[in-house]
View (cartoon, rainbow over the protein chains, first blue to last red):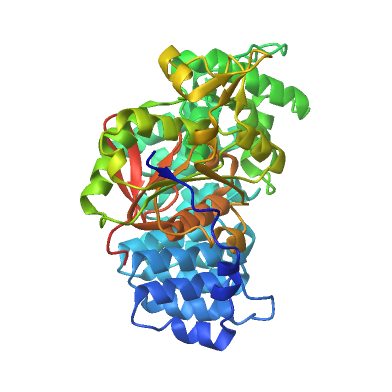
Length: 210
Length: 292
């Protein structure tokens, strides 16, 4: 029979792999081999809690990292950490020209509601409308009680049609009846825009649930 | 294993959801879980949502949706997922994926893998063993090149009791309902109590081991797998948990290795580090050969 049994994997492998210290692992984050960098990210996560600086070390590496698999490993760790300083560093990438990095930063920020909440006002006021759209995308996905009202504030005040459409899209899911007048006013504000008229009608119908 | 198609009626009175509420709910549930309900499932969805509304003392669909959508702990979301899915396992469940294994995935691995190295397959969570034994039988029955290779099948679960059941390999008629008679005769032994036991040779060919998927110290000893089956588990994880699991699979797979998820699960919604591949009727996820 071709099926062979070799016994379970060696339990000692864990200890053999995990005996490198903090300084060594941080240095390995800058190794030229992406496999070593990725292993360093994973092993840093398993050090005892006495390595508080590793979050910023990971953020430093993320700033220049180009390997998708290393980026992914760093993001998975940063999301689990979810601290305010990590969220602050991730918001820097919303301005990045690298679409993949921008997208993973948005996804990561969506998964750390408490850490990102204090940063949203600044992001929603950013002079770059793309950053405001990303901020709206983050806000719309958060399980924050104040999210509907903040999205409503965006459609009341933001001058950019695409930012408002993004916020309206979020309100389709989380908006309340009391926001329908704001949505109608948005439609009036961009009355010449056919897509906005469609989006407004859809949102009102969905929020009314009828 | 889990299915998203509910099978039993509940005693709770049906909730009348408007079409717009149903659409909103389905879009949200799909975004969170990857499980899609078509219009014809509205009755089933309504019954289960009504049950959760009653159990959470929510006054209306709107109140309940707000609870699920904004609850920070995600506890009610998990209860909702549990209500919408049904745990069941039996031989050759979703066997189109096993067919893809023997007709597409294994032949491709055989073309690229150096001779002399074993082909390694990991089934986890293996529950009471139906999946790893199904994999073994399919390979023996349907992959014509199987004799040319050493094939290791590892099977893991977090539950020691269920692992003991898997090692014993004793099953009732319900588990075997999709097993052809000839296959039953070849790989099972009928017991005096009417149950069937997997043959000793097959039982002894699979390595069963205890592992907690979210414990990196336990999973890091699982390496160099060519194929991993992890079906209908990730829907029970939250987003960070799914992402961590994806990282673990990436580590556990050999370059070019394949990950098989359940029919309602999609790695594309979790992580972009795998490449989706289609084999026959299955979408599976491949670790790049040159993992950058």
